[in-house]
Image 1 (cartoon, rainbow, N blue to C red):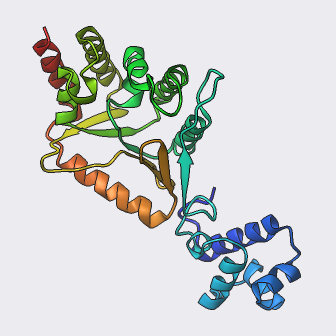
Image 2 (image 1 turned 30 degrees about the vertical axis):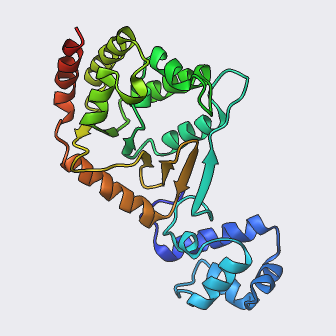
Length: 283
């Protein structure tokens, strides 16, 4: 994986060579398909080259060989694809689903970076088995057993001392869970009490490598998203993930997340106390 500090021209040469190799063509045929001179291609790839290519040359290569200019010059991090839709799938076999495996793989790829996360409901890695079974009952996508395995793997990842994970949820969504409102209306009090106890325990245990911020949704909005360091962002669309690898898109979503964090009404150190108050209100 190319480091962000790699000089732009060197990055271009590395990615252009990767494109040539992936095409399976010789340099002459590669250049011919892009309708550029072979000498131009050779000059671009020469280690001693210090001249940047013309924009029309980059455009011709990108169009002919199905890559993006953003990726060639280092503005996109994950290969030639700038965005893709990943479908949640379900299989009979136990264990994480194919989609879950990809998400866990992206976590590992970004292990040296900060992961930012806005969950749909309760943060996945903190969920109890009862809550997972309730959520997955009749839902499209991975079954409960697969999701429980994925959650365990995610929690194990978060327990590593070198990880850094920030999570944002609204105060209102957490309160709605505690009171059994909305989608939680059929989840019994005992299951909600158990989940709150687990939240209190894990937010205390995992801090500071896991930090959960609660914001006021009357003043802020944050869509379900995971930002994997500087590499990619996955927006959850309900059964689908829109995965973005454009560096500018990832930076924009990171800045949006940072704004939500700055405006949080409950800071991570106060979350266990906040949850304890909600727990006592159920007694």
